[in-house]
Amino acid sequence: MQTLGLSMIVRNGAEDLRQCLASVRPVVQQMVIVDTGSTDGSPEVAREFGAELVCVPWTNHYAEARNRALKHMRTDWVLVLDADEELSEEARSGIPSLLDCGGQVGGFALQQRNYLRQRYVHSLGVLSREIAGSHPRATGMGAKSFIDNPICRLFRRHPEIFFEGRIHEIVENRFPQAGFTLTLTGFVIHHFGHLAEKERHLEKQVRYREILRLALEEAPGDSRLWVQLAITEEVHFRNSDEALRCYQKAASLGYPRADAWVGMAQILQRKGEKEASLAALAHLADQGDEGVLKRELSGDALHDLGRLEEARQMYASVLKRTREDRTACATGRDAQIESKLGYVEVRLGMHRQGLRRLRRAVAACPGLADQHDRLIKALVLMAREAEAAEAAEAALRDCMQERFVSRAAALYLRAGQTREAERVLGLGHNAFPHSGQLQALSASMGAPAASKE
Picture 1 (tube, helix red, strand yellow):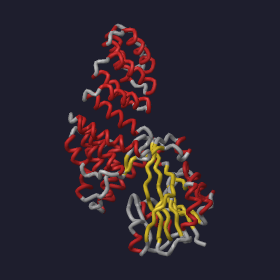
Picture 2 (tube, helix red, strand yellow):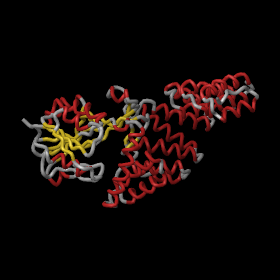
Picture 3 (cartoon, helix red, strand yellow):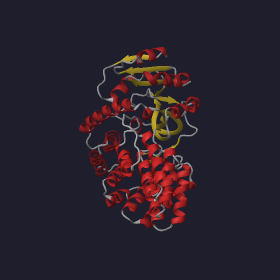
Picture 4 (tube, one colour):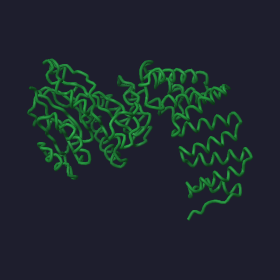
């Protein structure tokens, strides 16, 4: 019978480690945990589960630490997890049968399911999917969607199979050299790291950025590292200029995946360089998730360029795709697309059809502020100020934001409904008692304002 062992590296992972080890204990015969300097009780948790603990200094090199753990493994097969991950129930049941495979198979790629707080995200050219029916822990931590990323975490213990890379380390490149093949499975590893508290997550990203820069000094021609640094700079540090430079460097090195072009296009879009954004999007495939991203983002750029009919066609094609394939996106993404399509149609004079789409999108996902915003702007374009004011006030039930208070009050005033404007401002003063904007609006119409005390 083939044996299986768990190999891990940990540093201050006690908050998650117990659940991780509990998820894998039923299927492993050995646990080896390399601790790289924990101060939070992680070693005690490891010993509680009978793990063999190895303490080593941290050298800013993930592969080195991973390979230290591999040296202590004695089982036929190795399973690798991080403290903020759990092995799914299906994986626990199915992995033992994988180990009796033929001698040519050197490892198996499992699906790392990355849970996200955002509703709509893309990564590696893949769109996030609906959270419903997934892990209850993820739901309890506020996850709204997830992205699956296939990664080799289960492989034979063999001297020619080891980790490579200072960061985002992998074993996949070793299989051809060792004479083995890699097989893809559907078994899931649940990953909760992106749901960590903001401060804790940012601390990790500061370390990642430092290590990525070190890795690029060693391997400046590695396009994968340039994309990873770009994502880190853009998502976690809001450094769009540096992220754009990194994406462009990756593209010049022939990076084969969609991330570089999508990231580049979105930054250029925000910088107002619409034509350049469209040029970047032209590099994406027309099929699959890349095709959905290509059409939606192209629609956004075309809309801003005033090429409304072209934008309408892009949004319509995306909406058709998401409705034909309900697994193509997270819940509500089709409502987001329909909202964009409806607004373009109103701008094109297709008022009845566009307004119907806008109202339907808001009803489908009332918690999305952008969809309320498009409905309000469409009604203003149609010179229906009273309805626009009502729509802005209705938005407050789902998205209590200062901008909706001021817009509702201003629109009620334009419609000659002073009493309604005063009522909305009263709600706004209760919710935002220190808002200078609302104080000024009240003063301009002679309405009483809330005290700043």
